[in-house]
Length: 272
Ligand SMILES: C[S@@+](CC[C@H](N)C(=O)[O-])C[C@H]1O[C@@H](n2cnc3c(N)ncnc32)[C@H](O)[C@@H]1O
Figure (tube, rainbow, N blue to C red):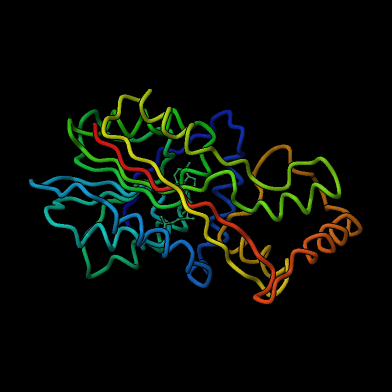
């Protein structure tokens, strides 16, 4: 596997080394936890309107284990496929997954600093990676920079209603940050326009997943590498007492289907 690496540890609100470490750890058992991600990735691509009329190079940002890249590879006129991830472990998984489907060029890099020249690509795609970037304006400006005129930008991310039940349950216990902060549809719209994108279309839907217990949810989040990465999170062990209180509060939300957990999926489409 040949990987071009350009990751630097920039000053970040979300701790990038933790994101990297967390996804490296999760990369081995990651595919057990992906049904939500796959549903969102499928919807993202199914609603994509523009068709590609000439041969282009496309980039999958935050390739993970390569689920979206497999779909991108099926699109017409994809000449070259680049896959980028901050986690080397994930790139290894993607490399294995794409064997025999389509050759991909791998980049270990940060979505906020794309290692590509200006106007190099015909399309930039990403499924559920941008929620780990603390400077979305920079991410969008970078995607705009590497796209050719009329190139398409298609991505999904999580919106602020994500894990509302978990946030509310922690709020009954303390004021610490226990859940990552997610950017709203309005902000995403504004950032895309500021970056220079046209034909911007952003929509969201709430998808409610049900878990046997709050602990099963937490394990699932950990398996996705999706647990809390903010510096405001509590360092050291969260007190057992505090954790039990949160679980008790979450249990009050139990329905016949189990413990609910809302994920606000945001789907965005834009053109340079
Ligand atoms: C939830 S996974 C999604 C994977 C894949 N797109 C899919 O649909 O299955 C998020 C991926 O984004 C990567 N990631 C997180 N922050 C990143 C960043 N700043 N730059 C590049 N990749 C990043 C993670 O390493 C992880 O592989």
